[in-house]
Amino acid sequence: MSAIEVNDLRKSYGQFEAVRGISFSVELGEVFCVLGPNGAGKTTTTEILEGYRTRDSGQVSVLGFDPAGGPRGLRERVGIVLQSCGVQADLSVAELIDMYGRYYHERRSAEELIKIVELDAKRETRARQLSGGQRRRLDLALALVGDPDLIFLDEPTTGFDPHARRQAWSTIRSLCELGKTIFLTTHFMDEAQTLADRVAVMRAGTIVAEGRPDELGGRELRPSEIRFTLPDGHVAAELPSMPGAEVTREGDRVLVATHAVVPTTALITGWAVEQTIELANFSVTRPTLEDIYLELTGEASQ
Ligand code: ATP
Image (cartoon, rainbow, N blue to C red):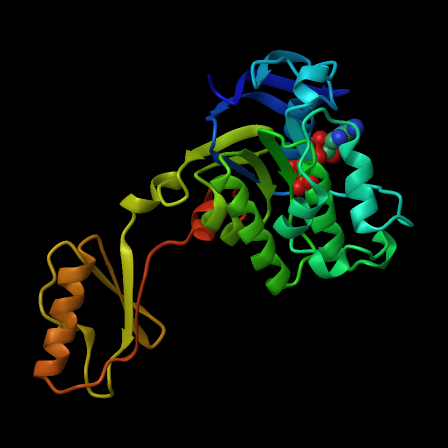
């Protein structure tokens, strides 16, 4: 059984079609990430899966349940971290975790959760006195209190400083190690690249690409780029022949696009050593997930 199955899901607000017939599935134990610009339909889709929003049509199965109407059997097995979640701000971290735990038959201990989200030093601190990043980690602890099999994380690190983001990533990874299924939405390419087994890119209510982060949009099939600056008095025409490579100028640099990155690099550097010349600013890059994302979502030229 898949953790999530979605087939031809549609949702309109009045005349506006926010989700336009999307289909995908998420396997058990997988981290599935939905990327997309503002207004693409990520939150609408997520909230339908969570049972917070109704759909117009299509089939949706979450852990074998139809989430419409919020069946209790499903609520027991799902943990949700919303973009902003109101908790009783005058209670402490430990008190809140304890209080939320009472809603569940199966529950994780407050001690264990505080450790997972690394709030040990803040266990007696009131929620209102936590920083934004610490609040998000508390939200995560509250989502985990019923020991869910499936966790929805809606932009879990928005507003975090770089250190807090790394901490949150390590928390999310520890959830993967526990075998949890994670459905994640994010605007951050590095987050998707680091955490996701599979990524779906949404644009204007449709899924425009889906796959492993390193394969998305044919990323692994695209050429790598070798760049360097030739010393004064040398021109690109002097370079050795490089089968299959395309050589162009990029300002004062030479750009060599190639699928055969190792032999081409060897030809260029071998030639430079032979000529005893320095190749300044030498670099080799592959297209990043962000390059592919911007292309797919049509934001590349904006
Ligand atoms: P973001 O990255 O900004 O959170 P999103 O991809 O989550 O965006 P949604 O929140 O799902 O996008 O919104 C998709 C579209 O539907 C947007 O154009 C939004 O304005 C519209 N929309 C969302 N909720 C409603 C609503 N309750 N009533 C009317 N339109 C809505």
